Amino acid sequence: MGVLTLDNCTIKISGHLDFSNVPRLWNESLPLLAKIPEVHFDFTDVIDSNSAGLSLLLEWVKLCKSQNKKISFENIPAQVLSIARVSGVDKILHLNVIRPF
Image (cartoon, rainbow, N blue to C red; front, side, top):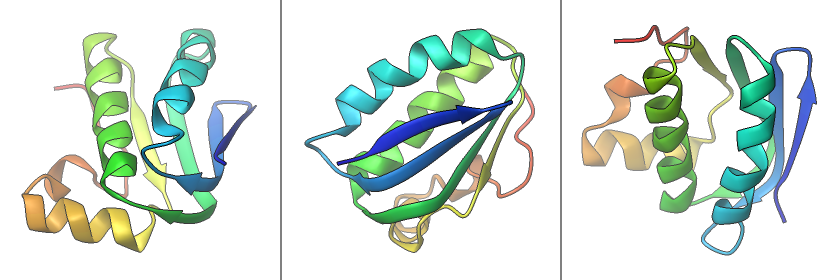
């Protein structure tokens, strides 16, 4: 089960990111994202993930872009990075700040 917690402008994700919980995590993230002007996601405590986790990250990028918010990711799970590289979307998920396009 994945869990989101907000600490200042950092949303910490823990547990598993998979098809069973990504839709719930997306819905839970929306009010958190509405509270902060820029967002930093920390995946340090994610145990494992699959392509659903990548989809979640891409949706966060899309949302932040539409709201002109800065977004950054830290400690993206290796599984997610591998899937991103294979699918050709890894350039969207820089480990440093992603600025609005």
